[in-house]
Amino acid sequence: MSFEEKLYALAGERVRRAEPMSRHTTFRIGGPAEFYVTPSDAEEFCRVAKLCRSEAVPYYVIGNGSNLLCSDQGVSGVILDTTEGLVSCRADGTKLWAGAGMLLGCLAKKALEAGLSGLEFAAGIPGSVGGAMVMNAGAYGSEMKQVVHRVRVFTKEGAVEEVPAERMDFAYRHSAVRREGWIVLEVCFELAEKDRAAIRGRMEELAGKRRQSQPLESPSAGSTFKRPAVGYAAQLIDEAGLKGFRVGGAQVSPKHAGFVINCGGATAADVGRLCAVIRERVRERTGICLEPEIEAIGEQECLFPPT
Image (cartoon, rainbow, N blue to C red; front, side, top):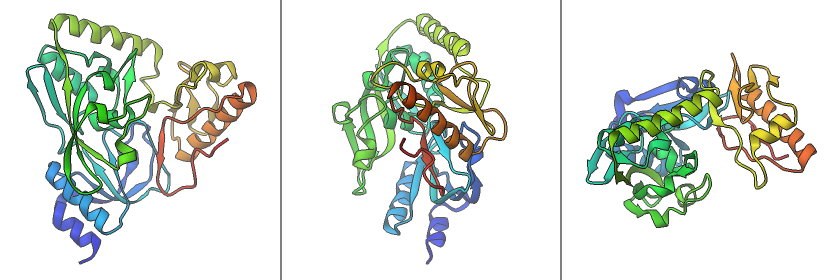
């Protein structure tokens, strides 16, 4: 049997050919995925990943498609989408278990319903639980490492393992997930009981701050660059005179210079060229080399070449 036949035997109607990635990224950018698979549960997810590994077919795991720039030429191999089959959620005392594909906004609401505090900061982050583990997602002084208890992963050796938080090596926009070749399946959060009105109030407060400061009305991949060792990326980009600067359909947000937005018909190439200008201008002015927070995938030469 060919790889394609084996893939259809495992996932059937949950396999799509030439699926446009622009439908599955918050940037609304991206060419076709060779195979796009939405496994029905964690077991099927692991079987498909095992098949890809055994056949040496490249694969990429996505959740909400935030923090992701997919090339205009598309992606060879398999895209594995967690957002349909890995979305379970259950509370057990102060612990909250959630599947890797659950969106962070939904997770925060589940915590609120259970009267559990600690995930208020996550309510407005447009990613999934799995992606939040990869990047140690955070906002407003809080981050995932403060609330994660255990992470259930599919290892590169083909086993399912529960990893305690202390082995996750959480740091700024970093965890052990990529280094170890893990795929996140489920996460256990350790939270604290709190009055629901207080939890809701904090979520609404942070939502208001986001609406005021971030370009939520425009497609983007969130913050484009990581925080440098000195200063803040948005401030450095603004001081370089680039707020509102545009290349094709990609633009430095006039509202928040830390965001590159799709202001209409942007391509991955537009975003790459704009980011190159940003990095070069900031480096020339300050000596600081901004590091992209967005991850680029697909059949295209490096979208974020080193400066």
